Length: 144
Image (cartoon, rainbow, N blue to C red; front, side, top):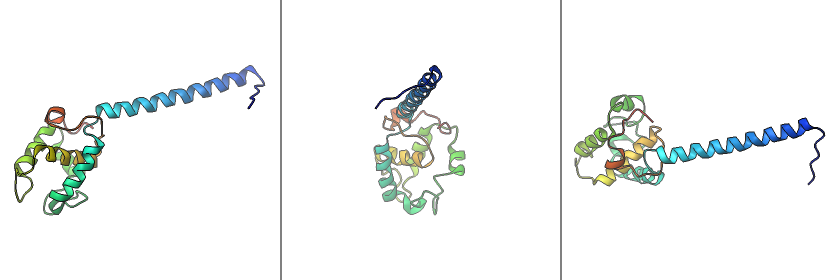
């Protein structure tokens, strides 16, 4: 395929268009890398947390996390309650009080996975590091 340019201006426009596309590609790749590096949990962990949530939590908090016997775990009320607190406070509450029919019975990795799912449902981004005591307990909620 042969492309003919009629003038120097055509060459300049073509070069500018190519440069714009190249910059846009780099920007998208950088954003994807940043999300992987700066996320709160992994996608796989949140997916596992979804299954665990349905097994242990949905009866009281509903499958959509909007609350029933237990409070809503999504939305403004939830975020306001836990905003500006370390994630470890939420985990500690879950560990001490949940599930309501047998508090403290779930292993830490199960609760961290459920917490990852709750974070995902509240718009916190996924990344490349599994949410755990060492990776997330001191992170402040309210800063996605």
